[in-house]
Image 1 (cartoon, rainbow, N blue to C red):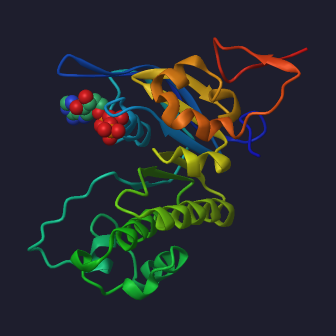
Image 2 (image 1 turned 90 degrees about the vertical axis):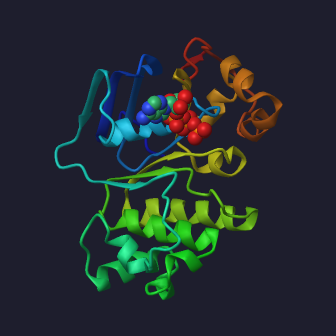
Length: 253
Ligand SMILES: Nc1ncnc2c1ncn2[C@@H]1O[C@H](COP(=O)(O)OP(=O)(O)OP(=O)(O)O)[C@@H](O)[C@H]1O
């Protein structure tokens, strides 16, 4: 499993703050993304998850702090929302190449990785929720990313489709060797494959391996009974205690 100390750092955010129109959206966020790791950002609605992602990838400028990105870092981004006018005729190939040029072959190859190459000429309006998300994932792959950033990738996808989609994301990480940073509410599915959980509520309440985060009081306070059991699966009998001031830390006896 990747760890910050042994893998190269792709991105480091230091003391990030974001204030828009006097509203504080992010405060004192520090985080590191290392090559090949899966980082899952969790938090209640309005916690600033999408804003954090946009700040990390550079489409939102932080009002405080700095973000260091590895030189020539490539990022593939799958946004949370994309509104497409129903009256606009748009096929999958055109959608994939709206903001980036790519040959038909490259687009088909990316779609093949997400299992939907047969949809290349399909009208976007006629795609199912699951098909649309796979097309968007393929679109993000066109960047040949070092980091794949996914904002709620399973929205509009039914439960079986969700499990398959997260399996696919994990497979892409293995095949392509990219890091994955995603916002997800599907903790019961994603945690088994997550290396680092970041629990956000404007500031980072706690972060670390799922096992240690699940024991943190701020995590259980934020997610209550709904999600704590999903993470509790990853707990085990300890011969050491957790430092709850920083839930990523362990103290061994
Ligand atoms: N460009 C903006 N201008 C003004 N306020 C904004 C802007 N972007 C985000 N916000 C506000 O910042 C807060 C955090 O929004 P954000 O979308 O980042 O949260 P989130 O955790 O992704 O929420 P959700 O889980 O509901 O998608 C919200 O109160 C939102 O209204």
